Length: 139
Image (cartoon, rainbow, N blue to C red; front, side, top):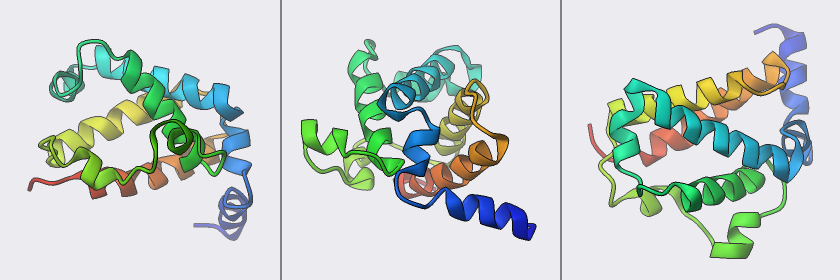
């Protein structure tokens, strides 16, 4: 990675820069909705969609609120639902490599719909790979 790119990505870790670049709470909700829209249309995501409730309204809301805090903004999820630990929260769902990869594909496609700088999209994909792996509970 070039030194310039490293500096740009380091700047994303400062304060609430990620939250602001994502468009604040409205941007986090948009990313969540675009993510779930992708889950509903991508054939590769059919299985992980089946692991969700038929009505995705609450899932969309929870994920959007989670994103606010995950992107270093206000802890909206915690304010409304209490603290979250991703792995235990998903332990009842069988998540293997295929499910993780389908989830990441949905996120990649959702990020492609955002007007974020490409360096920020790439940064976020690397960030999202970490919790995606932590939620994996099957080989």
